[in-house]
Image (cartoon, rainbow, N blue to C red; front, side):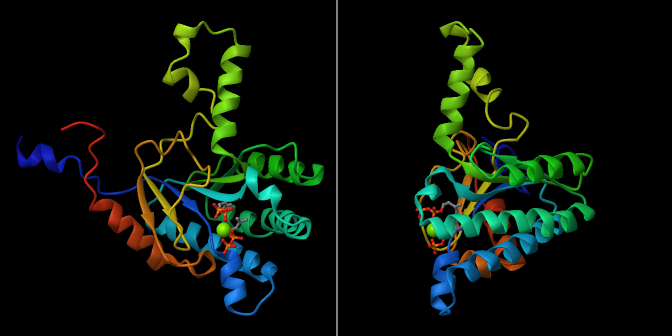
Length: 238
Ligand code: IPE
Ligand code: IPE
Ligand code: MG
């Protein structure tokens, strides 16, 4: 095979990037601060990262903000996270919308407080025409639940077994219009996927960094994008 064909496996730029934003708790405890301070600083890191992603030409960013398993955390932490979500929707996300960010949410919406659900819906509607970057916030999201829901929807739609193929499942995921993930970043030195984007990361490149999420910045994003650019993606081929 010629060099040209081999080099064609290299992609210059990750267009769809997912981030498991982990390490807020350790950031706070390392500084002797309350846990809440870590989660709040995490919101600032999100804003910084979205702005950096725009500068770097990333087209879509999918961030893991709250998993289906995070409900098992102490009630006071869960309610703090709900309040921070409300504050982020009211403060940071409208600011980002002014920079062209369209925000949508992935995951269940029936277990967050009703006023939060309303503001999620309203933000999606009000940013629907923004086109600089698509931001997907996974909140009360679980990758297995997403696939189970898609399977249920195949049954509800009366599909014959032979018609339940990859396209049928993909069309019934939380956000069928979300492209496959090119690059998945996980912060805080953990090497696991924790039920995030199980279907969508089938051929993603993974980058793990020791940086705790509240410390993540444009340099960390650029380093991850550079690592992606140097990878040889083969998709099972030659
Ligand atoms: C990620 O930070 C935020 C959420 C999971 C909501 P953590 O709160 O998991 O931080 P660590 O892993 O305890 O440091
Ligand atoms: C994954 O982080 C979920 C989010 C970042 C929202 P966790 O901290 O919940 O994951 P585990 O428990 O370390 O696997
Ligand atoms: Mg964690």
